[in-house]
Length: 366
Image 1 (tube, rainbow, N blue to C red):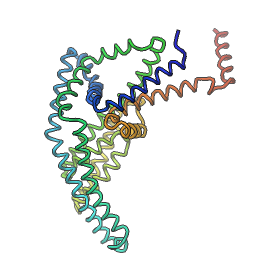
Image 2: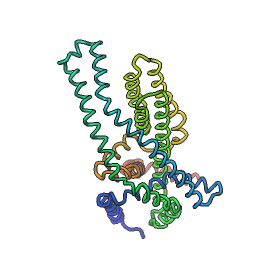
Image 3: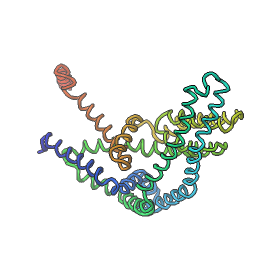
Image 4: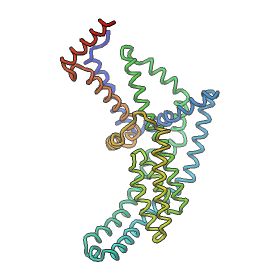
């Protein structure tokens, strides 16, 4: 006999409370394990594909881990120093950009850009603030990232956790399935599959789109000679999970930098604009339909809210669990709404009698 609903809610509520308490108390400790689990979840389809091609699980995992280590090492040795250097130069060059903008506006609108005008003071203040705050923000980001993800975690704990979780992923899922309460196992499996589809469409599908677009924008902008192309391309790629926003914000920023750098060379400025137009076409018509598909994923606003809320409350570890928790809450919310729409609370007695009459007529016809 199943437990009463109130008692079941008590147990489930206690489990959720314990989960958040563990996040709060052991955030830094469990960070490498969450990172390893996230990477293993992302790469599990690749391991399954290699198994279907004839490789054993251990061989598939070894091939994946070696490839991952090589790619990570290349990024750290080749891309990270260049990215940091360009970001630092961008922060330092911002006041000069605002000065040039102020000079141009003064020539075009001398009345508005008088030395004592509010617009002139605003532009000068923005440039100085960006330089001061930007350098401070950059230093904080770098120092906090190195504090949370130390060299030890990067070189040892995270790869080891990823290796073992990826190796035993299917067994872990099977053991978790055995632990489900038997009365609710079919419903929980259905919800878990919906959560996996929503999560995979975002993490695997949209995450892959973000990586591809970051490489595309960064490579093409650097190829045309834009000074801070790598930084702008990376930011545009990371924002690719928000439809149109990455192209609009990244495009405006890149074109502004192109105007500052290539002033008068309009073909070069137009080329930067063409890159973002082509990137939007590539993302919307090729990558997103192929990699994300039409499955129900996560709404961008919901993702932004989850990242902001969990990041503010739980710090870096909150950012790691924000998307999975958001996917789970979204699926549970849709499930609860569907249960409500099927209930007498929504339909009322009139619809209830109509359903009974239609069923009775169906039984009589049979």
